[in-house]
Image 1: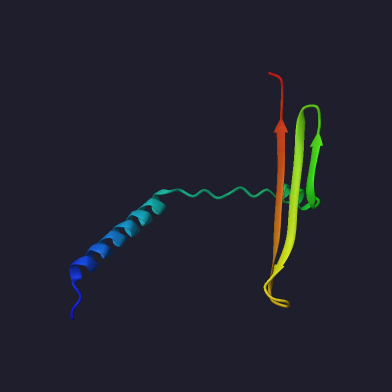
Image 2: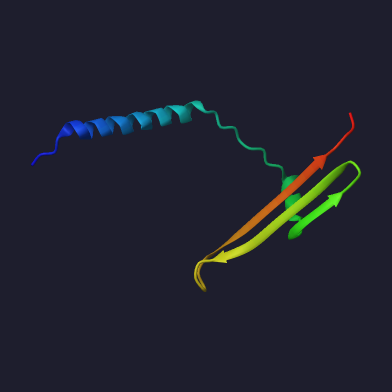
Length: 94
């Protein structure tokens, strides 16, 4: 028994329209390259593990670092996860 082409064609046209619209949208969006600052990378490497908070009269600084190695199996390949966050909240009288 042959398949009816009308329902298949309708689905193909819908998915094709979504694909063309997505392609056109991604071509219009201008992606800017991110800024890479070596000083920031070195500052994040210097952060100690855990959470620290320091308070000064004008501002509060905080750091957080989480480092773990995850292995797949006992002797399998591993992935190192390093999450570092630096934060500052500054209060000034105007």
